[in-house]
Image (cartoon, rainbow, N blue to C red):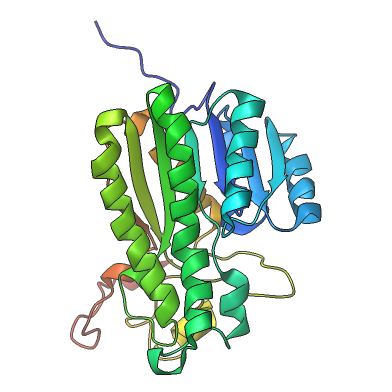
Length: 288
């Protein structure tokens, strides 16, 4: 007898908390999880934008907004308490919030020799400490319920050198190490913890901002590309990250923990010597 194949990646009956969920990648993750049947709570610092995002998601599934600054311990405690009180538990945590505003300013992060200690602390607190605060607080209801899934949104900056973003790179590198530690430490309690290493994703950050890849736009990435052999892949979409997050949160990923999944269009496997490694060519009659 052939076993029935379950509907893929459903989250029916689960409760998901997505930080930084009012725009870009975070909003796409909220939409995917709502569509999969989860009750979703998104948080952010901008109440007006957050409420508007929750209203958009109401057409897809159950969603609500709670204002919180995830770098503030009191806000994090209130956020998790709200989720557990409102929905009776917490099944999925997506640590997506990041220092987008700080990176856009270009006067906060930089080369190590130029970063002010206070700015280093600001970037690390937004990139790494916020994930620690949410994870620490969310673990209690997850463990009490017998398990849960944590998905951390990392960056290609954790894997490849990104000069001029030294604090951000350190934070994302720390986030991936933190992911592995939590995965090993809490696996016996039913909690899985994974990360997604994001490359260049075309998002709307408002004010005409272009796509981000841990602080860089596609234009920045292509400045040194002499031809298509050296050029990075075209930017992906927020949905590309959202589908990966949905998989890692779903029961179908029950045997996956401590993993870092690249969603970067192959950016992390670019040739070190593109001038010596020509790309395959199709015959002219097949090219069209």
